[in-house]
Image 1 (spheres, helix red, strand yellow):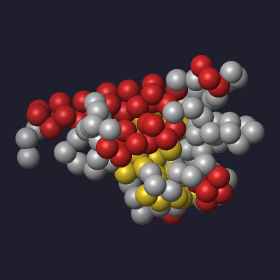
Image 2 (cartoon, rainbow, N blue to C red):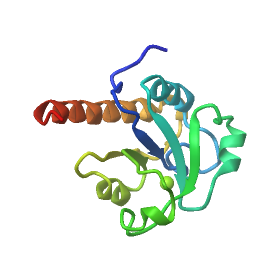
Image 3 (cartoon, rainbow, N blue to C red):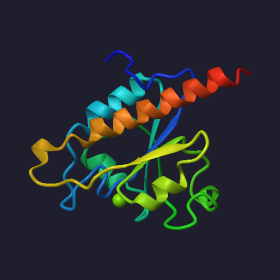
Image 4 (cartoon, rainbow, N blue to C red):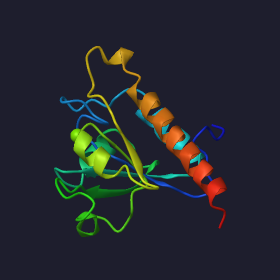
Length: 152
Ligand SMILES: [Mg+2]
């Protein structure tokens, strides 16, 4: 697909949580996950999946997400930013999580994030993944404005 609103001149690292973010309580994948992953890749960015429960190979396997995902990590459950280096060598630029605290911890300076609403039945009406994409695009617009304000 053509590049979308979140296209940027740098590759950003986009981190997705798993439970309550990409999958439901009964392990179903949320609607539009693959479409939004494809758009983020076509915009030039890298996608990572992390989870407080562990490295979730089984989720990537079951839902066949390998083609979009650049890495899998464990996620800190407290002191997120301070303990990040214990969990991943990749610095997140934008995170998506159903848990608000980690989102606010990572929303500072050039980093950002958005809280995703947990999946609610009926899932066919769930458009959260595209709302998340729009929030990411808004973050990228902020980065572009910052670039203009302080040329390097
Ligand atoms: Mg979660």
